[in-house]
Image (cartoon, rainbow, N blue to C red; front, side, top):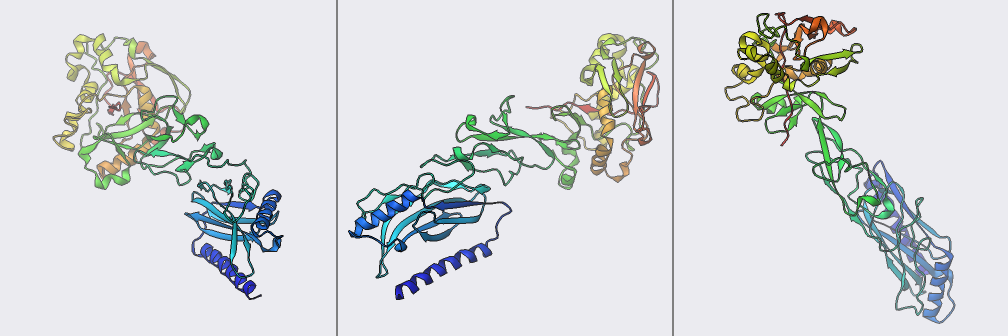
Length: 480
């Protein structure tokens, strides 16, 4: 009787400790659970082992099963070693690495325990909901019986809605190469085959959009995945691909920042601003941080002088046509302006030899860095891949610039200061392509005045010699 009182006191202290632990360590938003249920065959094996150890029948009321959860989360419960008895551990925070230790024993009248079976489970990572764990019991020297096995559905088996884990199942690791990003907390670091498939969450990185998880560091087409499955292979290494977004600022070292990081950045380290993304969420290019409408420059140019030898040429290689309305134009013909100056040179070799006179807008773009150094620094972009190669955008490229001008203006103002609030002046900007109107002797412009947003009349076709146009300069992004 005295022993019973002591035993109940011990059980009470254990239970109280478990409850207090739960209060002092708040549960995460997502938790998992494990339930251990004594099956009839295991209960019979424990009873048989008890009888064999003492060479007498045993009182089943004295048979107990103690389960301890250990690792990143610890708790303990003791239940009767009878069929149907269940110990449930709820509220275990997800992604805790735990294992279970168990012992089946007979409680003796003198207060001692006769341990009949012991077992240690495999280590698992807790997932949301119910979890599976394998706990095989082995007989101790106190019993001549081999006893029962925890097995699936036995005394050492944690129940799960998604099947069971076999004993000694291999645990695999996941290595994340985040490339400057921050991983999602829900992405596990280890797994077993019972956890598959694992749907991967997106990491985050300031100034970028997530471009997917890849199994190759070069982001080879076809190696991107959204889930870890059996076909992924064991112990995978996953590489996070990052794409800059519209308004991301490209630096001379090839990295991107956001405008919020500008106070720590020298303007001479800035190449330009991502102005649009293509259908694959890759940047179309960057916009230069100065243009001819800048208050410090304020220059307007003609596409071609009326006296240029090739003024009346059709320039068939750089014609762009479009259909659709404002905000939804579709383009055919020349869409990439990076080689348009060369095509003009091919068509008018005589006139382009004196570009400053005959093609002043293109001449200004060709010498973009030299033209804006005085407003930034004498060494601006010197020795970089962006010291040359700037060009007037094609009409499609100019159109994307216009669509995103609000975001781009915000970033440009942050770079250049509030005195440049009208960086995209309410005026017309040249494109490097030409139009099919009037026998191709006209070029199109985009008006950046917001009042034209409601209709497609932000597009204007002027004679190539029209002198009231500004020049934006863009550049392809160079990758090593």
